Structure formats: C-alpha cells, structure tokens
Image (cartoon, rainbow, N blue to C red; front, top):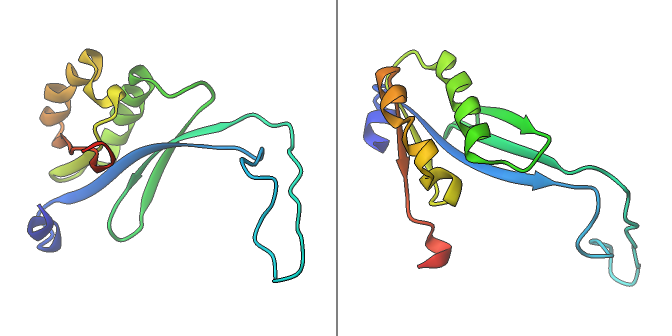
Length: 126
C-alpha cells in the first residue's frame, strides 16, 4: 500500500477516534524545576472526534456530541466518500465499532465508491 501511495496511485488515510476534555486527569502540569503549577478542573463537555489522517498530515475530522458508535462512524465515512476521487485506502484499528456487523455491512457499498477499509490488529492487545 505504501508504495502505491508514494507512486500516487492511491490515497492512504489512517482513522481513529479520540475524546478531549478540559478536565485534567492529573492535577498538575509541566513546570520549570522548583516551580509548582496546578491545573484546576473545569466543567466542560467532552469533545469526541473521528479523524482521518493522510501521511502528509492532511486531516478530515468529524465531531460527535455523544459517545462514538458504529452508526456515527458509518455516517462520517459516508460523508468522507465525497472527497474520494481515486482509489482510497482507510486503515482502522481493531476497535469494536470497526468490527460491528453494522459497520462491516457497509464495506461493499464503500468499495463501490473506491474506498477500501482495512482493519489492522491493535498491537496494544497482542
């Protein structure tokens, strides 16, 4: 795949989900030696994002107010298909949302739009 991407024959994206919050897990942050910097929690809503990243750092993101689930990923991936203008490979990790029957049922539809979704093993669990 990498060689095809370098040759310009395909687009290559890596997708992942993440949650961001202003409520810190740790009550302190980096500081110069001898100085103490405290971080005070702030009430906020979490921001859930699904990002699709190319090796050249181009990124397409989708925000979700609720927890990210397979239905949201399908909607985001369907929208992403509008940007596909040549064969495109999307590499995802082995998250349960990527393995759900609902998500897998969409793979053929995406292939018809020249989007090929591949899951790789999550190396943290091997």
